[in-house]
Every structure is written in structure tokens, then in C-alpha cells.
View 1 (cartoon, one colour):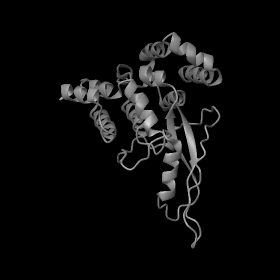
View 2 (cartoon, one colour; view 1 turned 30 degrees about the vertical axis):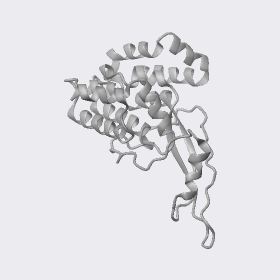
View 3 (cartoon, rainbow, N blue to C red; view 1 turned 135 degrees about the horizontal axis):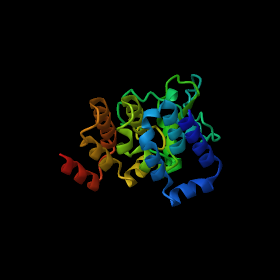
View 4 (spheres, one colour; view 1 turned 180 degrees about the vertical axis):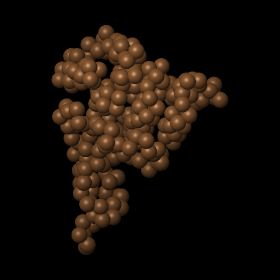
Length: 238
């Protein structure tokens, strides 16, 4: 309970004051957080992991187009981005099936790089009789937290297998989302995600189920194409 309360307080401080976020970056706060957690991972549970997800990313919602009455053409509704209020319910494990492997990212549209062009594609999609609804996606908002905590497998290898799989599922969702996929991939590549995953695959203390999930995550990234530096890392790994 004390660990959960401490992490909740940290998340609240970061959400309520942007200066706290800058201070965490300036003073290597996320690296210190990982060091602080190492002897306490036996107490780390899914609630704590949810708090980490809330610190690392936010959620955006879009209104999807619907098929109009017969005799009318299908039109696109301008998606409206809604970044929700800072809330500890923004990202919860119940919203995303982290244990379920994604089928990859073929056919997914990129993020807002070229907003007008991206949105214009919606009018060309056949949505069928899909009613108006909100679709959601996860957007990385704290790259330092992702780099120094979520991708530090010297920390997570001491956690339960279910925690590790849930974490990898979160990362898989980041690179497989309908919107902001390119944004997430760009950030993850800047912090050398592929190299970190390959290093983790070489560890001798990672469970088979976790290794399988790591391979699936690499497959999702591969569908977008590896960069030259990433291919070099893959060749060295092989």
C-alpha cells in the first residue's frame, strides 16, 4: 500500500505541475526511480503498473465516421482530438488486452504528420453500417519515463511474468495504434527500442512467455521497416 501511495503521489505531482516533469528530467529522476524500485519489485503489482502507464502516456479520442442513410454518399467527419483531464483512470489495464497478441500494423494509418491528408483518407474508407463512436489510442507523452523505467529490463526481470507481459503489451499497443503510431515509433526509435529489445532477448533470465512477447513486439516494428542502424543490431544479434 505504501508503494502504491508513493507512486500515486509521484504521478499526481507530474500531472499537476509541468515544472516537476522538467525537474525529473534535469536531475535524472526516472533513473533514480528505477533504482528505488529494484529492491521493492516483489511489492509491485498491476495497480502500480497502471500508474506508470499514466505517467508515460495519455489517451486521445476520435469520432469515427458513419455510413449515412441510403441514397446519400459516405462523408468523413473531422476527427476531434480530445486529450482528457489528468486522471488516474485515463489508462487502465482493463481498456487494453495486453495479453492478446496484435495481428500487426498493416493497413494502419499514420499519425498527424500531415493532418489534413491523414484525415482526408477517412472519406475513402468503407465503414459499412458502423455507428458513430469514439476510438481511442495511446500517445507517448513522457519519453524519459519510457526510456529509463519501462525499457529497463534489469528492473522488470525481477517482476512477475504477468507484469512483464502486460508491459510488453502496452508497448505493442503504442506501435500498433490507428492514430499516432508514427509519433510513438519515432520516439521509441530515438531511445533505441529495437536495440534494447534485442539485448533483452540475449538475457538468460527472461521467461519463455516473455521472450515470445518480445518477438511479437519486434515483428510489429518490422512491419514498419527497420532503419539501417536497427538492421545492424539485428545482424549482430543473429
